[in-house]
Amino acid sequence: MRDNGRVISATRQSEPPAAATPPRLIATDLDGTLLRDDKSVSPRTVAALAAAEEAGIEVFFVTGRPARWMDVVSDHVHGHGLAICGNGAAVVDLHGGPGAHRFVKVRELHRKNALDAVRLLRDAAPGTVYAVEQTYGFHQEPDYPKLHMEIPDVLAPAEDLLHPESPTAAEPVLKILAHHPTLDPDAFLTLARLAIGDRANVTRSSPSALLEISGPEVSKASTLALCCAERGISHDEVVAFGDMPNDVEMLSWAGRSYAMGNAHPDVIAAASGHTVANNDDGVAVVIERLLDGRL
Image (tube, rainbow, N blue to C red; front, side):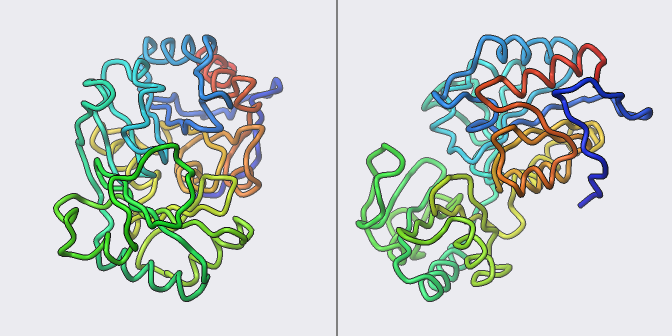
């Protein structure tokens, strides 16, 4: 983690740091960040992303979404075609289009860790219900609410879904989703992190009490760091954007980072700068100023 120092806003004219490192990669979250609330990518944002790529700056979408939900931006991945999905659990090549994506890197949640997390969180927060995200499959407990507008492949208790001899055992688990019907979302996150400890990484991106549980040390930041290392890109050459707690590590790691105007307080604290809200094209505002040399 780095010291974020003075907050520099993208929404006002301010002098950039004298030794600002030219960006080589832009890493942006999707929901609540790049996407407007209607899940569209505005024409202004499309133009800004294309201009960044034309200037030689790679753009990586770094999201909690599973690969099957990436059609909303699959037309904007440009030459490299890659996105980081599942909060860092997978690097996906989207060139094939919806339903034909290819997993380039998978950082799975091992079933023993997953079962430990389920057990510990059930004890700490009675009433918690679970869903399981795999590379291609989505399964849930019977009482898990209809949050994702899709039909699960299998309905069963989480302990059965995660059993080493279950019918889905050959497919890697990317993350567990844990929902509680009454707890405050931030309180649920704190409780889960204390209960689960280092057996898994716990975060959240939903406004409801819905947690996302990944493998130990798997996060947007750690997978982005791996992708950057493969390209010879340092964290100082990365500009990142986000709005929710699952973005905090990535924003802390990047050389320059921007919290959206609609961001969670923890994100605002982690970022080195801030921009306007997602519905006001906050990512495009910063990219335009970066390309014009105003940041």
